[in-house]
Image 1 (cartoon, rainbow, N blue to C red):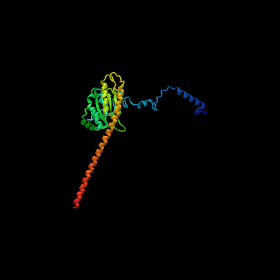
Image 2 (cartoon, rainbow, N blue to C red):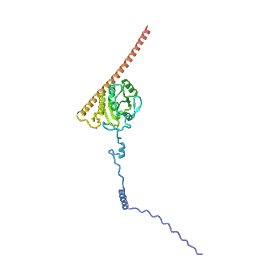
Image 3 (cartoon, rainbow, N blue to C red):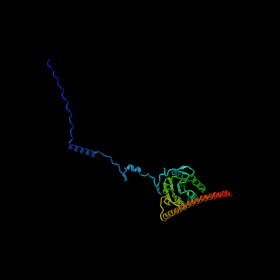
Amino acid sequence: MPVELRKRKAPVPPPEPPVKQSKISKAAAKVKETKDETTKPRGRPAKAAANGKPAADAEADAPAEGTGKPEVGKTIALDGFGGEIQKNDGTPTTLKALVDESKAGVVLFTYPKASTPGCTKQACLFRDSYTPLTSTGLSIYGLSTDSPKANTTFKEKQKLPYPLLCDPSATLIAAIGLKKAPKGTTRGVFVVDKSGKVLAAQPGGPDGTVAVVKGIVEGMEGEGKEVDGVKGADGEEVTGEEPAKAEEEKEEGKKEAKKVDEEDKKAEAEAEGEKKEDVEMEDAVNGEGKEGEEKVDGEEKKE
């Protein structure tokens, strides 16, 4: 039989090596890529603030409207202003709650320490003028960092017809701009109406703080004149001698406040001195008693 020859399968050709891209081709591709990138639509870049932060971050860092030291004539946001405080009977409250409870607004007079000479004078002046000062619907409160117990004692002893507010952390005192650095309270007065408009925010002595509130009440009762920064019903401002007079009274109030602070410090120093003398006298008396006993014992032993 003839031998049948089988055909061999053609060998599979090896894969072709990758085509090397020439330097010219690479350069052309890079140019094309750059061109495509520049023609792509881009969004507007975020604006940077002056401090280098994006605008969104800068807006977040910006103080909220109505915060910061209050200025006369400006309206403050009462919600959360000054945090929570207490009345002298221990009842928690806020400036907003006090304003809401009032008929026309709130008067806060600040004092450094209950029952000291200057603070007693100031509280009693507001007590003696309480009726005329509240004739237009303003509610009066004393404000200090004292405890409810200290303020209650102060209120009862001086027969004050208005509540005293306790702000141990000085959050409200700081908010109205009457906190003394590093700690302490500046004697002064703060007045705000029902809408949150600041009618007064300034330091002053006992007489000066009462005079400021009297001026505001007169302005509210007046026929469109401005007294110490408060406009009347028709919004007209005072011209002539009244602004100069108000400025003069303000300067006198500052001098009086300084004098009263010095008197308060002197009274506190004297009180400390008297206390020290009492302790020393008591020690001396106790010491003499012991020596006497020793001598008596000694004489008895000798006998």
